[in-house]
Length: 244
Image 1 (tube, helix red, strand yellow):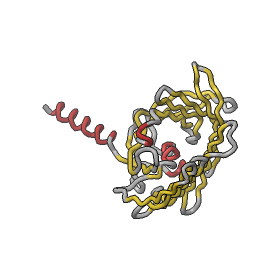
Image 2 (tube, rainbow, N blue to C red):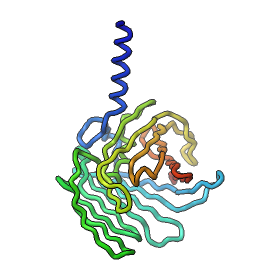
Image 3 (spheres, rainbow, N blue to C red):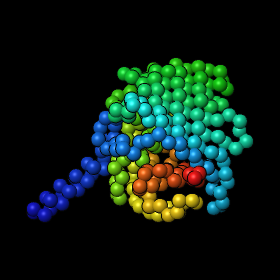
Image 4 (cartoon, rainbow, N blue to C red):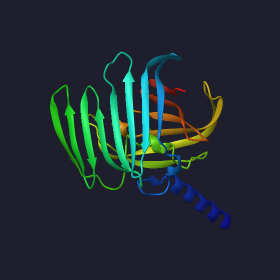
């Protein structure tokens, strides 16, 4: 009877651990891994096992005394204009402050506070939509959460949910979840830095009604550099590799 009760308590404890929701200001983010850096990655589409180069993804992380700034820039081969997303968060708790997204199709500006205000300008339809949302609870900016993954207390078998806010004129908007489904260890062979021991982090989220499928990140155990990212969704396989 005592053994059964003990096992029951362990199972309940594990279930509670797996269902923890990570929010700004709460435990679970190890800010010691945050640093000013630039990560450039070549993006590829996989067709029958062959890699077709698509372009360059550049992530700039700027760490100040009060704010964390993350800038994602996507340049597609043969396309003049880039897709740029910029997020500003308070370093204390990584609570979101502002988010902007600019590309050929649309411009989006968001300001976070008690409400989320801003606008979405559809450049093709020449339509400007005002944004005034009242989300409940705490959340991270969806543009920052991939950086947060590198700052989690990663260990084999680790799982968690992350509360994020995402705005989309074409899909669901508001507070949603990103889920760390699985964490494991492996060796990643780099082009110049040799063999690296990495955390393999498998994640899914509700952005775009879940169209991103499962994403896999390879973080260096020593310094949490992102070496590789994979995405499999709707029969599509995309890959990004760090440029050394």
